[in-house]
Image 1 (cartoon, each protein chain N blue to C red):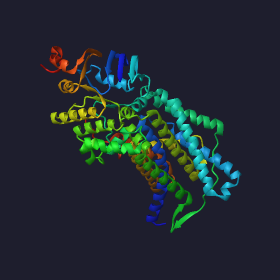
Image 2: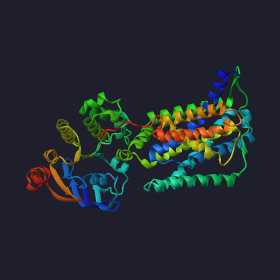
Image 3: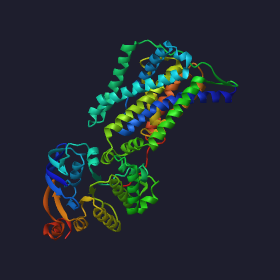
Image 4: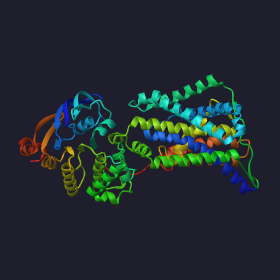
Length: 234
Length: 308
């Protein structure tokens, strides 16, 4: 479904991605783990067309997307829940969700999807008239995921959904990510919380300084000695 | 004229000119809200709006329309000038600011100053350096005791308030208005939900410029004349109003415009002649300096704490 081949991305003179190749298949949950500054977020921003890549290929369902503007990539079915959630702070919860569906014109279906995300995250229904910036961290994360779902993505990119949240909330969010996947949305998950991510995913990639250094079944990575030492704190 | 009547009279005068400042200030503040650029050429759009108004009015009165239906004539004048200025604003952004989107912030700012000088001289060369006069169309007014509200003042306040309400409704309720707010709050996230940022920026320039066009016509009619340099001071005043209200904040620009107009009217009205009228600019710019020193975020400046 999604394929990156030898992708190079630069920030000015900094060579952030040095030939990243990876693949996400339809229906999977794939995770990308790695330390701070490894290039995980850059990978997602490159997929979404925010960071223009200098070399390589990014394909979605067989079609190259690396030269497309971000709005066309969203229209093709890729949505991102970015790091730090990036809720529009002075839009209400409802308006944030409407912005998620910005490119859609099918009013009736948008209404349905709104009900659907409210059933996934009942707290958002209660808070729909509140400004996004007034929500707690966990609620903002839920809103960010809900907003991305409002685009009806085929592929959902999640960047550190556990960041800064209490363990109980993290568990709740991971449970919902699993549900979303079971409903048919393919998921590409970037995480520092390697344990949670590898337990949820079928396949995992490990990234260091802009390169993929390991890739395997998630369960195999969980047992891997190097992964355990570097990312699972053992 | 009693003291109270005098105050009411100044209030009316202040609100009239304040409405115009507010209209121009909206263009500054909306553009700043989205691309953090002080578009110093915005005053020139206002000036061009006034010129287009005079020219259109000249054509229409030659056809006899101003005599047969003044309301229709004014409607045409406003629309023509708005469309014209919208085209100017759109083009200006495309050729002068868009290529500098990734440049350091000083570059577009200096470009804006250059744009301002260019437009002034362009109008001077094509229209001449002499004053041009608006034909007096709205004569007369309403007298309540000794307080006088002229029809042109009613016209200015009415149209301004109408446009401001329309703008608020647009920003608050429409899909595009919400996209503008989202873009102002977080550009990167806005593109991640599929909003075309370039298009939003273009629309912002179009709206701001058409409001400035209306302001230009109204002031031209109020004072009766226009010149190629009127955009400079009006632009600075409106900029002051935008800063006073909190640059980037739409309600703030409206509030700032009215406050500045009132302040000027009262300064001009209470300092004994012949100095009052001359000191009103000093007052306006003293406000600018004070706000920048003591409350740079302005009266309604956005200070919402954002959670990490």
